[in-house]
Image (tube, rainbow, N blue to C red; front, side, top):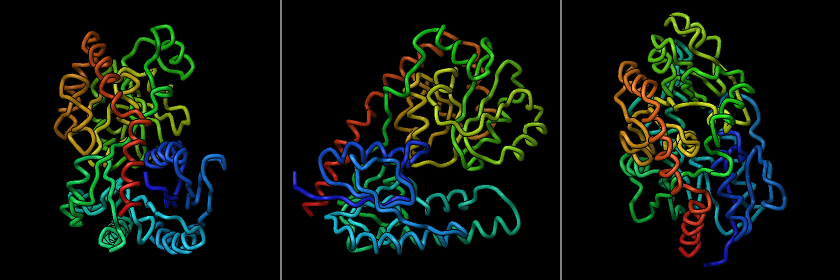
Length: 375
């Protein structure tokens, strides 16, 4: 393998989010082979793993902060002097390698780039989304770019369609999952103990949702699906506008069947305590929470989007359903009523998740970085 050093630009590298967790897991393993410097506002990796160059994003709207971050990364890269600069999306204006954990242009084309809100908030979102898309377009068109790592085949298709990224520099390396952390409960006793600890009912069917950005991830439709199902408890773990969605649950007549658990640093316990994973997101690149849910043995009810179309085999380890509360409710009801089916899907989910082990993923990622270094 060609010897090289790596500077990695991302807004944050830690194990509490989606692409942040992916970055932490990948870099922990890549750093065993090459020197790594993280250019970020926040980084939880210790000095024994990677050097950390803090990047101050300042205050203000996310659009202005992102532009300031790009400028600061350019200055930091010159100080670090690494062989390669690897950027998450357009965190850097120009990079040797871009890891695509989202495609702003595809999200805009399909959903207007909107994440909820009306009036002035909606207009600002539309403007900001247009600028984020322009940032990405510039980054993917830069002559410095040697490789693009898309986290799913669907994301690779979007980058080719919207930004003209050539197949010759595109590589697909999926996100992964830590099977030591995310696993099923060992037996019924452990599952019941977890439910007791989390304040969950022992005998009720529990559908779980994990994540933020609730409008994009279809939380309203999920609550509407659960509303008539009196023997299903829908648990939501993650940051979001809880008061707004509590009012919506009340309007749907689902307030007693929806529980907002807030942010948790031990999501693995919530997965292990649940019966199924309800995640009707409208757009993802390849969501880590679906991989974590699968590793924890949860049948997944979701839409056919990037990542899930590769992870889920219909009827085997989950259900890929059409959009809308009715289709979600049909899949939920079937799983609620058939414990044997849930057990079979649970076993299959764990088996399907094995190919996404982080060690395997990191080896493929490192190979792409080595390609870029040789190029």
